Image 1: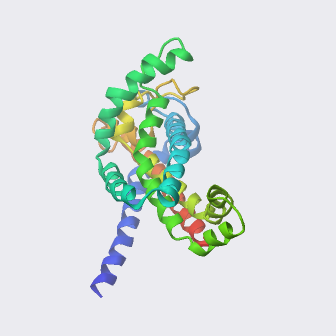
Image 2: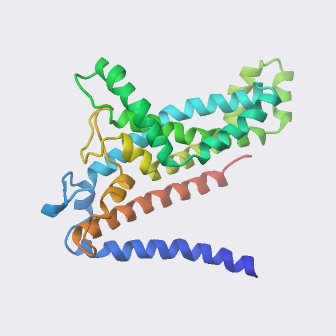
Image 3: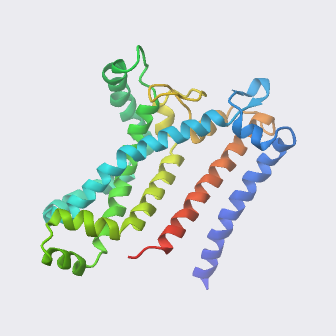
Length: 281
């Protein structure tokens, strides 16, 4: 009975959080249309302009780049560790992945500021643009990709480990090589699980705050390339909530941003549940 009550309490906690967000943000809808907030590009709180589009664009750019970088790396790592690596290698890799997954976000932010930002500014950006400070979409995407790689690798390995050995043996007995078995049998068979893992990785990347805030330049602009500064939704809330007058339009707009982020995350969670229900394994 106690466990049942705790389960119900956790569900109600999510509901209470959602209701609290919408109560705090709802008053701004009496002054501004929601569509106007989502599509307006100017964010000037002192002038009463609250355009969410730069933050939506910044979140999308950083998250998309992070997934593009992390997905192939994570998939290849998981394939190697489950199909090729000796058990002794896996014995040492597992704890390292756990350590990487458990590092605080600010540690990744410091690492990105010290290494990734100067590297982008001095070596990568000059190949494409005349000048870049290094605090860019590219830096944010790289840092985010490193943060979600441990999660994706762990999920992919769990998916591959749950595939019956009969499938592998049947493929090999028909004359297929180990690599042919991997990309013609194992990957197609686990595609729904891989998709669920990717969506979970997207959800993790979207919610990151400190690391992204430290390496993306914190500029409320809509980027047109990977070498421009941006600001994501979580970074905006973290940077400005403490300065916004309680109860004012700026304060309400930040809570509305939080509500938008909540809805995006909720949508991703529902997508994961739906895809998982269709999984074969």
